[in-house]
Length: 215
Image: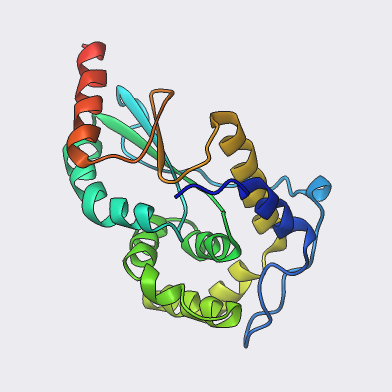
């Protein structure tokens, strides 16, 4: 999915008013300017051994159909063959091409982050369902997914109205995406080299070549 206006949309998150619609149980997030971007830490979501010989960074959007396909069809095999075996350290970086993608990231990160990848899987699996409707309905759909993952309403309220966290997440998105020249999702940085979306066979070939070079 290629979106040329990614950074303009990201700026709108911070300048265009509330980040979340006013829905039952959620007050709107206050507006803020890009210059006032929060400095609070945004946890890096990763899997595997940090000392693994190969590092894979995936840039993905929760509203990107191709990202959902990768998460459902490719990632389980990739995890089994490379992450769980200690060959790859995997890092996920969220891309926010639209407001629902940011809201989904806020739900996935809710709590201490220990449920992140499990919630992310649910978000991708149900992508066609929760992305339907007006903004208030989409936010409500994400709350339902959060509850299904075991999050309490109070937790979801706190996460979805955390303006500082939202600002910090957008800031990290802008900085990392610009640094790596990301304009499409999913995009992969494999040991610092950029690759577009691909089949698992092609993905595996690149990983095996990287691993062979380290031996």
